[in-house]
Length: 326
Image (tube, rainbow, N blue to C red; front, side, top):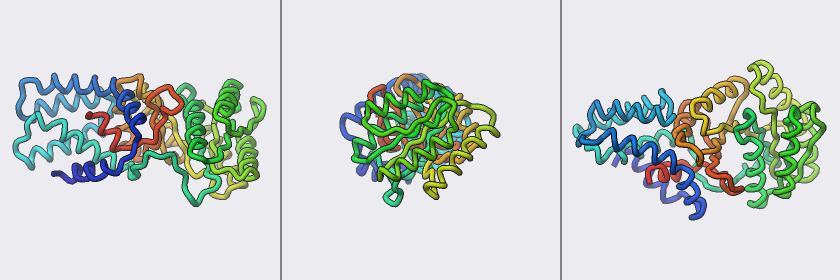
């Protein structure tokens, strides 16, 4: 048994998605899985051994599945190493080999393996700043996060820091009302840093556990974006010294390579500490989770696998790989 297979087997026993969540994940990845394995089946048709032709075809399939060129090459090199070591690998073993190596790759970035919505015990309130362009599901992700944290027993306060669109403020208010959490907002056009400051002051006075700050969903040039987010951070630190504790970048998984480009832009403009990849249920591009996690070495913390309020899940790398290869 390979090293990564041992990791996968041992961690699998400790993974913890409930049955309903696991079914949602399986269903959410169905399009990606069907597309990938139909191509893989054609690639190995008539072949009994993993040879150069099979690897070339596999490389094309992984790139087409939006795993990304660099990550694809890593996976191919890992498999080539296995082929060299084992001398003969049958095509019937390819699924398990792929499963092992992708699990191993994800383990290098996503070290935690929880399925629970948790906050650091020593951060109160825990401050999460959310960034991302319009249309990726940023506001919806914030609303679903608020729901999940609230359901877990945490007191949540939202900050409507995207003051450039009245719709963004209104949407966040709707989510706050739906979920039953507090929201701090100002008029459209207000200073986002002022909203963040007021939100943190309110959260401290309410003895809140979690603060989620929305930000403008515009992908303007890096300098302006950096200056704006830096100012928001600086002002928040007047209330809570080490805020924000995490910066969550929301990416739309259905956009494939465009999600890579957005990740490049935002990681160049600010320190992104974790990722949420949304809309995986409506696309065959679920491989983007693997590529983005590997290329940016930033842990994927949440994935969106459906439209329901509970269909935002904590990213569990073991369950993800299990559903992908199930």
